[in-house]
Length: 232
Image (tube, rainbow, N blue to C red):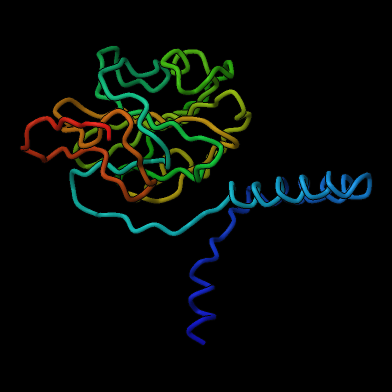
């Protein structure tokens, strides 16, 4: 019984958004196997990767007023001050921004960085440049949320990338969302930007790895000096 329970804990659920893709990969794998067995093995590996891509693991979110939690699994690709996209209505002054780049091997279910009410959802069509580039924030297809917390308004922007061709959002305007709750996903590689109010103390650096719903990106109540980082 203990062995069975241990195995069950290792099985990660698959998000329903991935079912149609997994079935598609499996059908292609069977066809390739019919053509030539080695191709079938390649198709089987691709199908397993698709299952892995659409995994939706549970996360343990630290809950405390003032914390800003990572919205995505991935690598912090930039930290600095940037003007938020105009469609968010957050003004034309630079805000503190942390960008998280997701590779095709990261979990792509996105989670809310703060608790609050979604006061705006703004979709903007665009290009499909490499999401790791700063230019992607301006030119790529994106979907932005403005979340009004007890402290301030935050912008969360899902950005499509070279491979990503579909941004999915599970929430609606006027809805209240909790810190760490799922709000959307981006299919096959992309990026999520978080815009934070003045005075927010960022606790991650360029190159830091984040876990959606668990990693603390920043703290509005922190009094510590700006952190420095080293790669090793």
